[in-house]
Image (cartoon, rainbow over all chains, first blue to last red; front, top):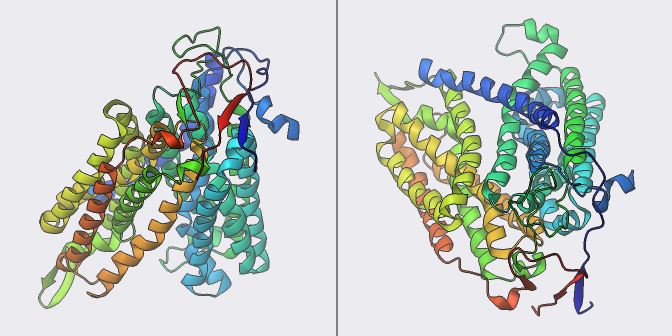
Length: 52
Length: 478
């Protein structure tokens, strides 16, 4: 094993447009809707604890 | 394709928002969190293969063991390859695991389920679990607890989605069974097979969304807080100390945290494993010579749902709070207040279902919080250099607790009788043992100190400009 371990610097970043608000919203909606569905279904189930 | 997955092809360009990273991480964790909803298939698979419940349970067990092993042994590969390649690999493993499992169901070859969902899917779980952690911490060095809390909350949330979704898919693919009102109706293997295929394709797609949205921060010298339209909000990972995964496991701090996580998980599993029978047993009273519970099966199911919510919420709430109060203090809360709550559960838990549910619910928020806060704790101690790999190795505590927790609790409870026919009194010894387990974790947390400088590989001043030449780390003798 060598006596040194080297971490190289990253190359140049990709050329892409700055993040738009629309892209941010879409990204969060894509993961948010399924999560809210899961939370809603679980709350319905948990409600039985109080309603019997 | 390989080029597209390379580390240098996933560096954020100017203006890339760091708030795109949490949804990418959530896409991964929401997908792999399905594993905790595997129980919805158990009954149908048992009937389809005509085998024991234990034989079916092995599918889940293999997946969890592989999660721990792959997180532990592939952590450095994940760090080296970057989040995109890791997420892509996790998506391939997790998606193909479902497909191979579906083939196993169609051909009635149980070993294909062990291989597909269990072995290959389990590798996807391990790689997927740790893949976004390091990247999130590097993008959010000011709020690592919030960032990792968001992602790891997804692992809890994944089960909340998968459980009702799988039931609905199976009902849709199994119309005759869905129309049957008899409680004994069992979903056909064909419906489970089709459900596996749909889930596999869905999770593969969702994880690809994560893989191609994740970016690593550019190696700019911009200090944190100078973000705006001009550049990504990069805070150098070269801030503070850097300790490799290989060196981290040689430090007492790593093993103290291992004990902390092990104790916290063991105590949480103590409740999770027995939740439904436990609440019924706690409120079982002698009624004219017959012991009956005042808690119905439906209410017990509601209690399990409440615990799932608390587990998920705790991951985000407590982990975010740790950014303000500090990591050591928040674990003192999880473990110290956890001890008090467990003792209260044992002594006054049977006074009312509301008290019982409230105590158990808070304990489960600490269980979730313990999982979500630990990457930030590791970052505080070992720096961000290989925090993902160190986290992967620490997750062996989860695997160990997954075995030890149920073993301890079941052994104590079964010595008193059969769960589902016990009373609150029968649970007290197990609950007091959990107080002791949490006490061990509390002491271990108190013993966590800063890592000795002899383990440091490089110490770089905060907000230092990026070096113009490759950074050389000194090798530290074991």
